[in-house]
Image (cartoon, rainbow, N blue to C red):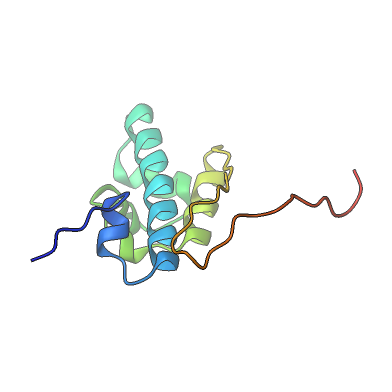
Length: 110
């Protein structure tokens, strides 16, 4: 039996690097929302009102039901309670055929 190591649990359970990336991002968003709710010290009913979702969705959130949420919905919920989101993109080669990004390009003007 060959033992493999992974960067994260999401890499281990996902069927593809794309799925692992989605799981990681959703988990980070869910953790931030749960930390907000814990800090606010509110009931699930109040949390549902603030997040703009049914109470059952809050229960799914606090019970780590990651499959129940999309990135879009989690970002929406975070924005409703004043949490800002930011994405950091880094290159991590996944195989010998993946070349590093050569140069960042700026498009548009500001």
